[in-house]
Image 1 (cartoon, rainbow, N blue to C red):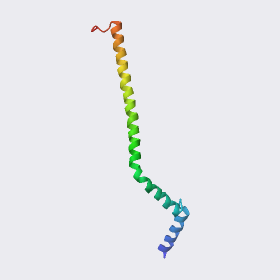
Image 2 (spheres, rainbow, N blue to C red; image 1 turned 90 degrees about the horizontal axis):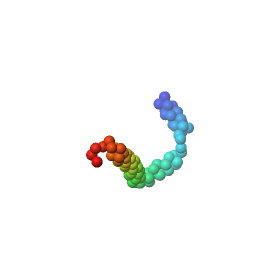
Image 3 (cartoon, rainbow, N blue to C red; image 1 turned 45 degrees about the horizontal axis):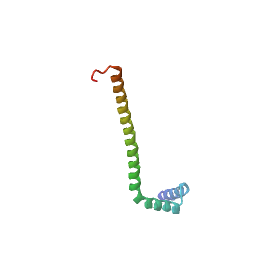
Image 4 (cartoon, rainbow, N blue to C red; image 1 turned 180 degrees about the vertical axis):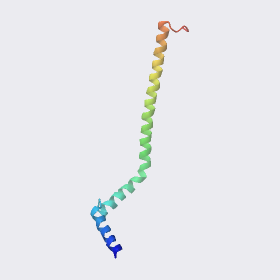
Length: 85
């Protein structure tokens, strides 16, 4: 008897606390299932975009370091501190 009472209370509380109706939940699951085939392509595109941005940042950093090294070398040659010229 206690089991049936507990089951009934659980069902009523579940219905009262449910965030969405069954039809809404099924529709959401269906929409999510339809988007699944597109997920790998979308994630791959996001990863490619991130990689491109990081490569650009790295290229800018390397280019900046190379330019600073070139300026430093030219400055030392012009100022006479470098005896190799």
